[in-house]
Length: 84
Image (cartoon, rainbow, N blue to C red):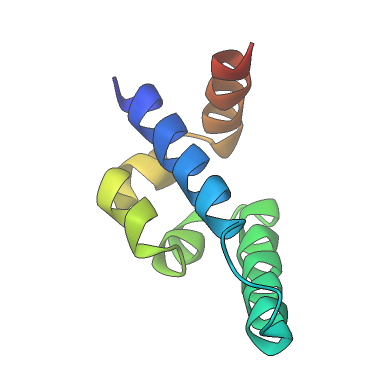
């Protein structure tokens, strides 16, 4: 159940991120910078910090405890399995 909710949340975040208008390049640049910074935290396995910096929609679906106790690779693997 948790995996499904996380997968759906990530899918929503990804699909909604494509809704921004290219008419505001500064906002797009800021969003890309923020996303890159967040992914760097995840890559560095700083899960506490990455949860603190996550989007509200993500925080509403995944608790900090869930995010920090389950390795990120498990979340990614679950997402990959859902896509197949």
